[in-house]
Image (cartoon, rainbow, N blue to C red; front, side, top):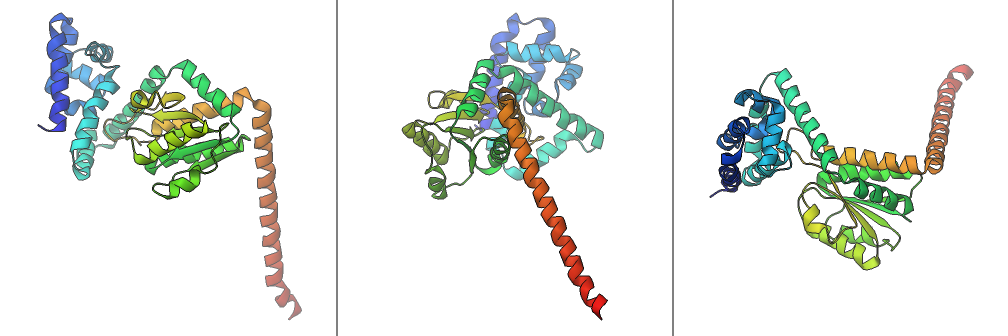
Length: 308
């Protein structure tokens, strides 16, 4: 039995156990989800509602009645299993076929999934965990942003923006032996922000173990590793992944990072303002220096002509 078949069986089992007690409208949705398991990861709540003669709200309620946190959770559960069991080239064609060939349809699907990911990330983000993460960043001696592969994108973004706010921050995105060099300066008053969507890698284990050994705090931004790593990190923040691959892996993580940065800036405006002013001053100096060099070069080109 393939992994995707396992995912469908899980959905079928949930539908079978809950169907008798569901209202008629939710029953229609549940049966549709059961019979179109692989297709629904490319469908919006509105499209499923239209197909079942119900509404998008009914689709969401049905997903929750089946034991999922919502439609995005249901789609991720099935989509992740299918992606794990399918070759990349096949997955690419599935995404293209699922989105349709008309530009308008493609836009609808991509923006719909983006909205679902952000809404679900917001819904499942604990306010106290977010506040604690902001406190940790503000109080850190130094922040270390860690991300490998596509997770390097939000990690680099955090590194650049935190420095601009006046908080010393380093970026580490190396794998293998080079990672050891990036971890050498970690201290007890530091905070490590880890971007790791779904895979528990050797590098991630080493970062967590070393942070624990020196007494550094850790903030994990993840799609599905929260339960597995809850006992090993200080704070966990969700970043809901794409079930279809329509939207970028780092999309939710970048938005969560934006929230953290705004939280830091709003809590320590004086420091953030000073960092912004220094950045402006340095940029102005670079522009002035560049203009002066350009004028000097122009004078050197003109001088021989004037003396000839």
